[in-house]
Length: 118
Image (cartoon, rainbow, N blue to C red; front, side, top):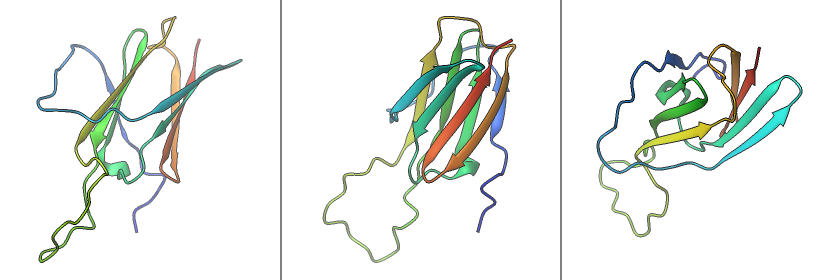
């Protein structure tokens, strides 16, 4: 079993890289609070090892990949509705966030990101 508190990669955005191929765009809720912002992203089935978080001047980018780990040799599908692919979610904020602090938690398929603004 993987450690749920394992760190995800936190990268500073120095240039915009465009990924190749179609992307899945997960749903997100964004909340304003006294300390800054809380972002909740629906990432059911995504391994913590497959997540990247990048801070820009006024944007947060969450990317990675959801893989089909249930599929086994000899299986053939009857119905497939879940998207398995690379994903990217970019959230724009009305203020600068790159100098704030970031904490995150990944629990029950939701990534919760806390951005504390200076």
